[in-house]
Image (tube, rainbow, N blue to C red; front, side, top):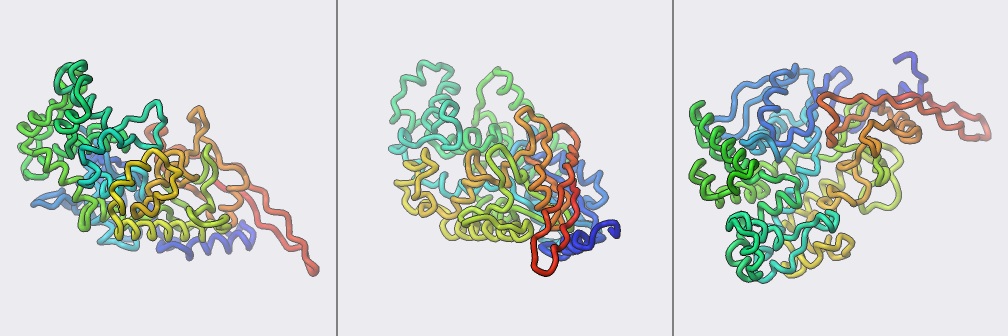
Length: 451
């Protein structure tokens, strides 16, 4: 870029050298928000110049064999799990990505999103002590959900009882003790957690179908699983019958206990979600491009330069990205060391108060868990570069300048659905800072411009 001022060319070259394992000539393949959609992921691989599908999951392994071509970097923008079709794909998608990272550690970058990080909560919130019947009436709903929409486990289980009994009045007459003894089970509490705290309603049954699918190895088995899962999903959605675990178990041959074990073991050492979280990071800079899950600014404030628990702002965007990733690693290590509640009796009592000072001392990694829920400190995970009307919103001039002066000219994000193809937002040129006064000379400011 000989057309740029010397200071800008130097910043651009630093962009290739700092905080990145990429080379200036590397090409970058990017995908984000797969959200457990295995079919979408396979189509992406098929269309990609960077990836080649060598073999589908087989012989008990949930990971597909995928090759990354020479000269390519792969960046995955987060939210790898949840949702999918009637047959879930979280196990296969995440396992394949973790295996790709293992095989190409310096050329594959896994950015974590809110759907990935929130699975950390399972090690504490699905513990035996949290499911104690005597605690049901006092366990609140998620603090980050508006009170008018917040659903506590007790209310969820009462709705579940009404659905299964077919009579809302009968369910309403059940005492809390009767509700606890009949419906306060690990499968039902996991269903509550997925629906009311993670935005993943139906993931329990999708996981059941994916487990059944992975047990077979031929097309006929796969077709039978899909047919049974789609039929069950269609009937429940249309209201022809309530969701029935017993019918789903019979149709797919996977018990509720096996589904629960899949979720619980996924965040334990050796689990596929644990592998994703261990390999993941919050920010990535390759050359002159900054990759984040959500972005740097939103109505809640600007996240650029901010690191939770750190006083002041980190001025350099590159140093900030490194510091943010270091904080993520510290939180992850804290979660490894203290995966459950330090005091089982205190956890739920604080769940309705996000400002409670005792949170961080009660379970490891809580600050990171809080970083990915609405209402937290300005966060790169939930930021949205959209107006209140849902239209694209350019960065302001100051943010553009700060990024440009660090050799960053592109910001690539996901998180917020905005049509079926990428939205390109060209930001206004950022004028240089005025020259700093000096006794010997006034200096020269860098140029502007960015996108």
